Length: 403
Image (cartoon, rainbow, N blue to C red; front, top):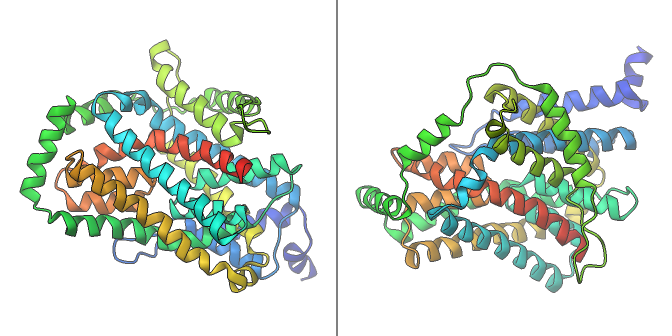
């Protein structure tokens, strides 16, 4: 039985595959746990990985790095393929206002993160992790980690993932709580909100039916996933991500990285591909499979790496990250939500979708849609999600460089 014991002890390919597979499998089982309408989903894989890491299990450094980065690339690329067809459309007419408000939520959260880091002298890596846990944005976490590694000759920093893991659980609750608080403040009446939603739609020159028609029209009935364009797109994205971008005032060249490069290429391919008669379409089921595999690999590798010394870090002051994360979650949502209502006169359903999309949080969208009859919140969510995702990934790199 020594061979079986060695599988868990001796580092190697078999050891790494076994460890990652167990973490993912256990995490997926736990992801079925729901607290009323709230679920942490695949983030359970991260939590399970942290437990394994805390217990002393670890991956070979090069293997862990490859699993993490390749998983992130698959995840990011699949997101770009999904949101690409509606990316440029989201800037038209009423979409401009929603994207401005979404950008305000993004920037307010970043500003608060910098302020908290300066005031409390927290480690910049931990605060960037807290920020991306507070906004439930995994691609941003990956972009921050990759930028840090590029700057420090490939050296990883577990504080990113630890801050993310600590802030994430309460962030999911905080986003839904913000939407609920705004409902109480606005004294929402469903009939009145339906009328206001239609007024907003008429003013913006669109309505829910038109949006759904556009989405249905953009779906190609092709059951074959075109693997050539998937991997060629990934290759192009990696090349683009490594191009140095020199910005005045920033001493280090910024790169779109292994997150930003594939995201941009996938958006462009999915948007312009059909117009150029290039078969870049990926079926929804295939896209979902790629995304789930990618995020699972990323979460497992990040969790196992972050688990080493996790408890010691929390006991040593990391418990404050929970408070910081909750503040970064709630304050921007409530502030912009109030502005959207009283200054822009948007319906509550639109505001709920706006907040959910700005925080890139599917559980919040599910909760928002449960409050309205025709999925009105999905319109705002799909409008702001593409730009928000892009901003989160780009700003993650800037924060790492600046802080």
